[in-house]
Length: 613
Image (cartoon, rainbow, N blue to C red; front, top):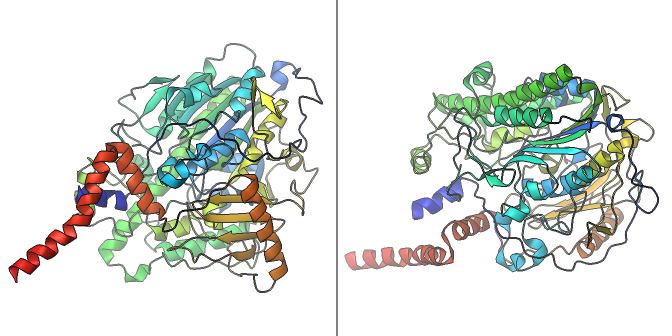
């Protein structure tokens, strides 16, 4: 059991919990979404079917800010590069700092706390889990963009990771998607139907609401695009389609086909520090970050030159597999683009690509140890150098290479520094008038649903939908940015707040206040201008104390409006993940036994030592 517990500390642990009925949240003023008609002001009549575009929403998993070529990466992503040339790349787009809250906001346009997903359920402490809106599964008080599009005559398809609930009433087949193949867990193996960590008895895949068995020749990125193409081809009428494709790439375990890995062998032999500098420079040259912007060296980034030659060799291949997984995702996405061109659907399709959060930094600094190999063997994995990334292999990147993935930003997934929240976002297609352009306008994940509705000519509901009261959307319609009629959709008086596990941020104009809890953060509020200083290198708190206080007041109002609960004293998110995982996997009684053993073992050891004396 102690070994099993240690495995939880060395790997991220996730699970699921049942959905409670939504609690009464503080009332908020209902506002019309800028640029979006409401049911009260417009009829629900729709244009001729083919005058409305198809929408393809693509979500990468744990992809860092400069992990694709249009944002400064050395990784070859020709499909995404072509989309960037045919649309707008957003350089100031922000998401939640972890997957489930992002997915909730992405699909509803509602703040994650009000949507029932303030955090991944595996990280929520019992003091918070006793509240109905802190279950970590998508509430019935929100309506998804898929439901709205389906009711407006769209075909709606999903192929990929869900992570918003796995009971029958919470699966995507009950949330507006006509055809689905969905992985309900936080992650899973990319080569076979296998859980990637012992919190799960099996990898929980569902098709159209029923348990599903993966094919023998499964590789996640290929399979998801195959299913998306299959669903789209089943559309035998003239109605448009909405296809949501949330990839597993590049979530743990990081795995890729050998032919893609071979392309990156040796590319990372110079280490993470050199790579971080190279990406920063390319991002400046591309205009993704401003000239003169700086970046910090994170404390979790090790000294590359302190590694032994054998450690350098192993670390380089870890990153090579990561790059290969990114390119494999891009390659298979390219298959979908080519298919749509061949069927004549491409010209009438809008593509939206983004990541669910920033880089994943939970991989061990040195994965090639006897202890790690033994722990992985207990769950059927190896991490041998020769087969790294292939079937049966568990791979990850370290915090050090994750810092390069996020370059030139600071922090990672789960933290609210720019590296955890600012990610690539591309909107492309013939319906996007502006081409090959960057936008530095602040945008947030809740903007995606209102934008999709505006593109498709579908009205956003306000107070009720489907006979029940719902939360109104807070996101902004980005179409005015797409056609160049405005430079920004948030005014200098607007504020956007965010919180996860006590880490918090508020965006206001060009500024951001941010607090990250220890041990990674310092538990202090900081103020940055994230337009001129996206790397968050210059704290303006002492230079702009009045602005800091005004924004702190805005954040306090955000917590009241969205019923943000305080973190319990002594909360540690890694420890909470372990305890929640053990409880969900083995039950409360087994957890009590394990905890008792952890408490009693030191006393037993001391007793034996005293008797020996």
